[in-house]
Amino acid sequence: MIVGSFADKLAAAAAALGIPAVTAPGPIQVIYNRYKKHLHMRVIESPLPETVHLLPDNFLYWIKLEYPNLSMPGEWIQAKPSVVIPMLENGTFNETGFRIDERRANALFNLPDLLSRPNCIHGNLRNQEERGLGGIKGEHVYVAYHGRHTRTVAFTRLDPDIKKVIVVSSFNVSKEWVTQCAEMPAKYTRPECSCTCK
Image (cartoon, rainbow, N blue to C red; front, side, top):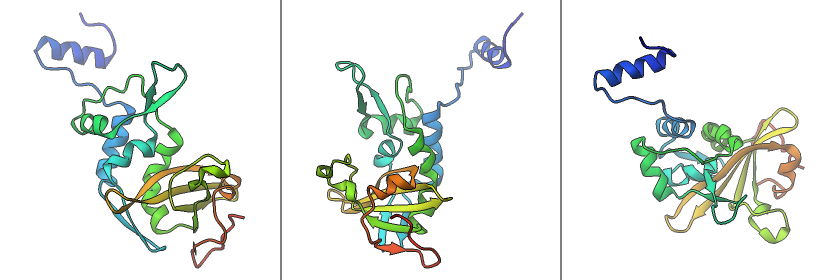
């Protein structure tokens, strides 16, 4: 007699018949599969104007996939696309020990709307680390408003190696946070709204 959940019973029955067990994909694999379906290799025209490319090599930076630095406890290391992307592609990535930034993962699938219809676009003050704000690479910061105090931002830059504009990072923040990185005046403001990043 088989005791346990339905999944356990199904796995036991499959094993008895010699059928390999199928495991559900982990959260990181699910996000990657969704990226492949909806965003992979998309090219988005922004009103700046700027042509932005959504490339798989940038996926790990968008979700900030990291693993522990075993030689320096408490520190984390950015995962390398050349190692992880092939495993995500064939569904063999072992997520154990890895972490992602959920704010970035949650903002990922709004990128097409944010890039094509932002409320405003600014120069990125955080591109210069000497300002003491903490560096975020990118020439431009795209801003979408969500109510009075919440914003979604995306940072873009021209990748010198591939000669294409890419998204460096995107996440949800407060209006006050945006004021620290948005150069004024805005380079673009959507006609039907006013820029409130002051």
